[in-house]
Image (cartoon, rainbow, N blue to C red):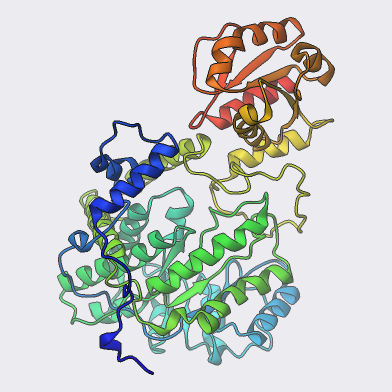
Length: 555
């Protein structure tokens, strides 16, 4: 029997819930994990579980209809599947051409030449049938002569006016690219990326010699999509709202949409455990598709290692094909619309980004405010780098759950420079340093009491040291810790046990380890005042500083 949709209730058969009941259940879990005490009231759960973005947006742990922002016109979202646009580049035009043709034969609808367009790269490519993205007047002239009718040319309105006028005769060509990924790769927050993009676009509107509605149609906006799928959705939706506001102020007729090209973040990719990048790319692509990107580029999972191989490029394009053809992500226009969480986050992000855009405008506009922009982005990057170092922003496979015995992936060197900054850079530098040592740097774990008592902290310490390429050896049960340490051949030890064991034995064990030759003794636990313990390992400590100092001792 078919049930009419208006009679279907997804919650049928389940008792009605309430916010108070959710808080009570959440508090029980927090108490079990020691994140909340016996006296913690249920209403404190909201603050205990809330987080804050780099733009100061508070992310509540639970969203209800009360969190919905004031009703706003929905952003102008595209209908149907987004364009699958693959990135290419290099100094060997024959090889690049083969890669382009392989992608086009396997479902890619657009190509992006990220770098110089060399003779022969586009041999056999029917430019009139696909979208093509290039940058600069030479490349633009070449694809225009080749018959390109769709894509973007990366031209400068102040320098390339004649080429822009020629391209404007082809309605599906967008000769000017507003590339916000440059701000993202410098370390910008989402609001900073959006504000910079809108400020740059407004500068282009002032330079283009067309009515505002036609000038807007000449722009393509390029944004970064990250593994925070909801942040990506909100960013792309907020960008559309901001641009609609700009065009409204400029007197453009309603209904003009922003054309967006989303690129999975190069900054988030890791060279260590690069297979995890497939998950990051999938989340980013999903967020970009749901967020309404017109075109999406998924960077190959090995892009941080070197030049991507054929397998990595295949995975990159098939990630999109699966989301479009099998997951049917593109069948619904604005699927995140109506979500209390996404709508609230979109509205807050648009507000903060608009304030940043206005600050840039007050400073003279995008070009005149470069020092201000660089200063603000540098401050955000410093904060993010500090959070990564303290593992408050964990990097799976690197700062958390590292695979010490992983064999590094080998690829040919990339033809061009990578992003200016990468989240993983500090930890990867430590891994490289440890791998370059004549023998694997090792720390001795002096475990106190039975296995059940010390396993949690011993595992925590081992995981932290492995993030810097440092191995650990356990003392084992029922042994003389000083003798076992002396036999380990390392000058660094870390005591692991319970708080009770520390109160009873930490000072005694630390002193014995020092007498046995230890130059550094760590203790895995909250900072305290234990004799002969040099420092402490705990959740939120500066892991990069710990690893740097340990490698110095072990060098």
